Image (cartoon, rainbow over all chains, first blue to last red; front, side):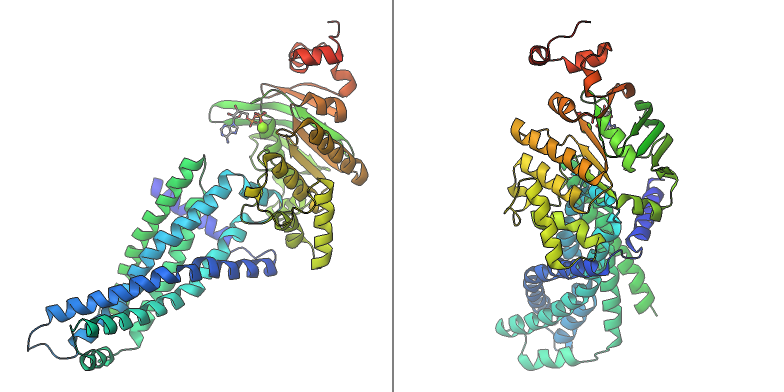
Length: 247
Length: 252
Ligand SMILES: Nc1ncnc2c1ncn2[C@@H]1O[C@H](COP(=O)(O)OP(=O)(O)OP(=O)(O)O)[C@@H](O)[C@H]1O
Ligand SMILES: [Mg+2]
């Protein structure tokens, strides 16, 4: 019962979010601001995590494949596939759900309890559209770039740390990351990213927008935003994987 | 002119507004007074549609606001300026951006024209030169004044003020009262002020509704209020010894 209440209210909110913008120039300005706020500011954490995860995956793979029967390309191939298919699109999005999701929910939640959203409504502004649409749009635009960068840095980190630690040779790794490359798998990865970007921003905004009470409730909304967007990311990850990769 | 007719509002099982009817006149400062928690803010929020009334009519120059379509409601709201009890300034924007916001949203003025208007409004509330400060850098009273500047930025036809001078020193308080009064006269707008400041009541109370326990208990103007025979209103007005001394205890 409760679940259906939330789902219904979520879609009613989305309906308002995607209503016709009242003033395009203001919306454009907000989108650019949010691209910076949501996207660019997440660069450092994404870079650090990607490089290290790439290194760790490579060393683990080299450790596990230490047998004469395993082909030379196995280490590079494994690293590339794990990063491209799952680590960058899903794990990085889960991390962004923590960073971006809590940020959005607490920002909008604070605006709700201090009557800033009421002030927008009084002015005759569609507060849901004005506050949420730019965030969703910005994330859908910028997340694919962030994830592409994460893929690149992950594979580079694998190369750098794998070779530097002596876990694999340079030739082996380079050969491996080029082996059996199927470009269509990138469609799968980036479809996931776009869906996840939408989930993180809209679900977090939903919890923020429907905050009522005081500072304590803002904290709860923020927690809910992270928990539910993470669960939904995994759920939709599973669904999309089944659609794309299950033959 | 705004008329409210028989509006009721219940939160849970508590009836907060009981069958309130009143007329707020154009070009006058209309006051809603009453003790804390009697339902003043709720009445204000019902009028602007932030709360939905259980029953009753809210007529903006004859149009029944709750019955209008969403688009029509937005059009009415573009003519509303509202000063919230807590200010409700946008935290992420500077003072200048806050005041400019309604202009960005609803006008096609050039940058220079907007800035001129912003500075005009800031001058009215005595916040000249504070353009680049963020709300977190303002004092409580400055936030109130900034919020008032934002409320009047886009030349509203209806101005709602929820306790415009709570938290202000007596001098600034009078300045704000006079400012609201002047704007009301000059632009002939319908102004509704919620207050429990007796000073304001006596200064600018053209048309007063006294709310007691969610009901419209008494109506009148500033000259009548001092001669009131109504017990609850009398207790409200002459609550402090100071008031009794200043105004002279009227014979009951
Ligand atoms: N959103 C709400 N949900 C439940 N009860 C509410 C809500 N808003 C107000 N109330 C209740 O309605 C009553 C009237 O509140 P209101 O804010 O209108 O008082 P007020 O007259 O503005 O008081 P003050 O002068 O202190 O601002 C209060 O008892 C309050 O507890
Ligand atoms: Mg109040």
